[in-house]
Image (cartoon, rainbow, N blue to C red; front, side):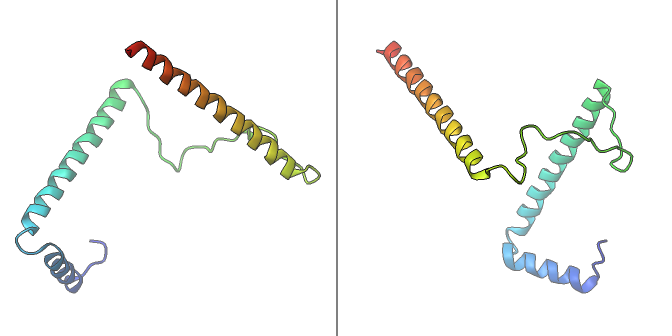
Length: 115
């Protein structure tokens, strides 16, 4: 049991009593038990759903890692990284401004429909 001996278990019980108090400890343990039961039921339901859909699960030790390429351009040592970052920041700011304008237009359009 996780290498816990009797002294460690007694210390944990005393700490729990001091933290929760003797009146609230049964209520806290009941709540924890309910939560664990619900979690266990949900996990079993997910496994049942996967089995019904024919999803196969594999051991992590037997799976092969996915190998692929990184999307986008990777700057070489000669490229000016600062200029690339500034350009990317400008594009992001322009996109954000466009989205803000669209959101404002949608808000004003819905407000006009209410009036």
